[in-house]
Length: 526
Image: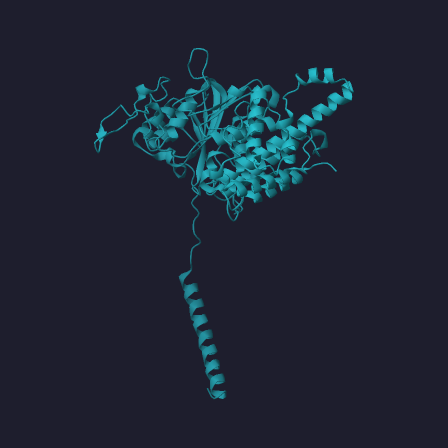
C-alpha cells in the first residue's frame, strides 16, 4: 500500500505527541522535522541503491563508482535503519548527532543543515533516561513510514516531492499554531503566501529574494508561480532554526539551490547577498513577512556602542545613515524601536530597475510620523509604492493585530496608488475572509477578489480606491486605509414611536402574566 499525504501527516502528529508537554512547539518542531528529513533522505537513498542494483546486478565495483554521481550519499552509520536498530543504546543521542554531522560533511549541499539541533541535549530533552526514552519513541514513530519516491501516492499534477513537501509545510504550520508568538519568525500563513506570490507574479529566468525567509515557505510558493526549475531563489534569516528548516524545506521539495543562496545572518547589519563589486545584489522579485516593529534592529551596525552620547553613565548607541555602507538609510533612519522601514528600505535598495516586491507590515507603517513619515513621503514621491492592501485581523501566527501588504514597483507608468480593504464585508454582507475560532483565514475566493481588484485598478465601493498622487499629498502622505476606502455602513434608522409602542405592549403583557401568577399563588394557598 502506497504512502499518502495523510500517512505522513499522521506520523508527524504522532511524533509531535512524543514531545508535547515536555518542551514547547517552537523547540520540538526541530526534532520532529529533522527526523522526518533524515527518514526522507534514507528512504530516497535506498531507492537510489535499488535502482543501481537493478542496473548493475552484483557488480559492486560499478555500483560503488555510480554512487559518486548520486545527489547525496549516506554511510551505513548515517542511515535511519542503523539508528533504529540502536534505539536502545544509552548513547543514542550521540549516535544521532554523529549521523547528522556525517551527512553534512559528506554532502556539500547539506552542509550545516543540522547545525541548530542537538539530539543529545539534556537541557532540552531531560535527563539521560527521559531523553533516551523520547528518542527511542521518536525513531519508532517514524520507522513504519515509507518515503521512497516510488511508494508515494501522488495526486494529479503532483510529484512525490510535492506530497512530502506539502506534508512538511503542513506540519510547520501546525507547529506555528502551537508555538504562539514565536511562530511569526518561521512561517507565513499559506494563503497569505499565495496572495503575495500572485501579486508579484514571478516569471521564468527571474531571481527571487526573501530577506527574512523563515522556513522558505513563502519563497517556495512565490517561485512556483513560474517554472520552479527556471527561477533562482535567494533568502536570508538570522534565526538558526528557521534557516535549517528553510534548507530542509527546499531540499524536500526537490528544489536544489547553492547552499550560499540561503544565508544565515542579519539581513540589515550583515546582508550576505552581494554582487561582484561588494554592493547589494539586486533581484527581480522580493517577498517578505518581516518581523513586526523589531526593536533594536540597528544594534548590529555598532555592537561596541561607541557612537552617540550617554544615558545613565553608559554609552548609548545611536544609528546614523553613514554607518550603513550600502546607503540604505539616506532617505531617513527609522526609529530604534521600530525596524519596519529599515527592512522595507533594504528591500527597495535590493530591487532591480524593473523589479517588484510585496511585504507584510503592521498598519503603523502607514501613518507613523517623524523619520518614518519623511521616508514614506520620499517613497511615494519617487513613485515606488504601487498598492496598499489591508488584511483581516488575527490572520498571522503570534499576533492578533491586523496587518497589510505593501506592493512596490520600480519604473511605474502611473503615479497613483491602489488601496484595498480586504478586512470588511462584501456587498451581500458576507465577510471577505473566513472567521475561525483561533485564527482567521483567507480562502481562494477572497484572494481572487483581491487580485482582480489589483489588476483592474479601479474604484470598488467599500473595497478599493485608486488614489492620485495629489490626493495622497493632500493627506500629508498618510496612507491609513480608511482615508481612502470608505467602509462606513449607515445604521438603520430607528422609529422611536414604534419602539415605544412595542415597549408598552410588552409591559401590558407582563402585567397580565403577573396577575395570572398572583391568581395561581392564591389558589395554592401560598
